[in-house]
Image 1 (cartoon, one colour):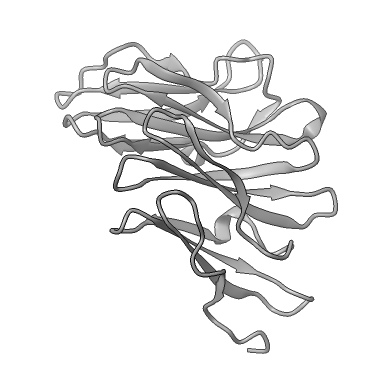
Image 2 (cartoon, rainbow, N blue to C red; image 1 turned 30 degrees about the vertical axis):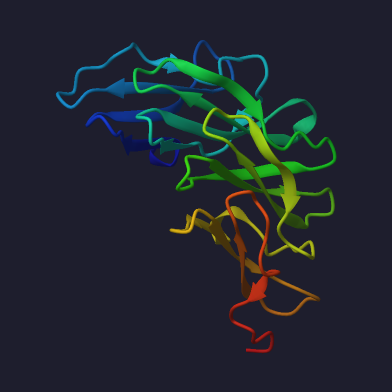
Length: 220
């Protein structure tokens, strides 16, 4: 189904398709196929998650092109105990895995929602995701990795107050020309209607300034 299929153009003129697929009655895995500009596939479709016994279910995955011609695949997978973690993996332009699936969140007390990824101007990778606690409230977190997938910034909390209004449909992340990135989201506070907040980060993941209430009208 369309929510479980993502397509992106690659730097070499080809494109990559990522999708979820069940096999032999097992829980779904994530697959990717790489095509050149003529539509020829190379190599055969790859099982990205590659762990049919790990995930009980998967949320919507995403694929992001990289400046070197490769691509990044991200997803949230429900593991044992009914909770989910956020993952990503790196691939070359030819579809070879350059970094295996990495657990970004890995917090046993929360469950992760959809993952958002952005490539910054220096090639670093900004990853943002929401984590929902057992009380139903959620916080946003962000982390930065270098172009090789090495951690630059450990997970940092974006939101200052947990809220039931923070959810993946209400989150947007974009890279900025100065090498940083910005995160915008809706958030409820103290049972007031939702407001829109934005936080700006530099390429190292340092926030400046503190999150801003853009709408600034909690009663409106």
